[in-house]
Image (cartoon, rainbow, N blue to C red):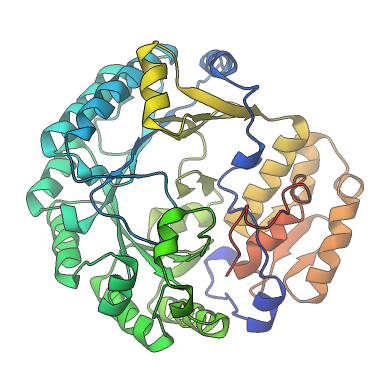
Length: 467
């Protein structure tokens, strides 16, 4: 069994405190902060042309951003639109269909969609007929799989989902769902304005299993108001009893200066740093004891889950949706603020409905900024992905892939890693950097050593802290 699958994640509170930095989550490298308005639709089109012309064009991953929510969760930092008026989705979908058509015309129709994801906001803001039409529009413009072997996933709000709608989603081709719980404690739920009963959640879980969904993932958040080690333990026990395939346990980053809705949270009600660390330690111990594998970066999975299998086989990948089993796809993202990754470029759509509608009405791609990766970017991107997905880096492979001498090219970085090596976070050898059990929880801090832009972006408030 490969090392990343072992239950040898060590929680060292002193090390966590020492390396509790602010930094990226590395869903991309370079991160979105490096995107600029010098990159736009013409550059994006050129990269699509190049990828279409490859001898074996890569399959596609499609992402659709549905920004609407009927109620606001105070902790949320997503690009969202809060409204109870369901008619707002009508105009948005009309414009989204036009973007789908425009993007579909760019890509070779033989490029199969191996991965598809609806996120938000909450896609369950849409009613069933709208969901059916969105999938129909997608099928008319891209080559969707019809064998249920792709990874087609959707984010679910259990408060807005019924067993009937779960059956509709399965019929449309979705085979994976993720649903937010955050915390079952009523006091915590009230403080963050997300009232969601265990019964509502379990009804969705049971409906997913009744309808043959292949994978169920549940999101939790630690560090919310009124949480304690004891209260979160009760939530964890009930979640584990529900037997999800995957769990994401995110750190709440309180950044009210950046996210207005977080100003509704009383900072005095947040758990103290020591209590927050205790909650994290409890979570790790409880999930590992329950048989889950630590994938990395807040994610846990059952040993037989595809994420765990991909990690064992060194096929795990990381993109804007988090960890993925499809490392060979170009990502085409549609809707406001959506970020695409095609070839060696990233591009992002405009952020507001007004800008989005204006661009689409002018028959333009709504791309507002992006970045093309240079050779150094691609080199560091591969290093960070290897470390964050597999907790090890074969430096001799990097040398062969990029025709460099690793120890010379990264002499400064290796020197910076020596103190981490002394602290027992990693081990450096002639041909490998191995992340040790004590360092796996701190992988963001380790990856930051290889981030060429880290000093320029060290300004407080740009990134969340590790813990």
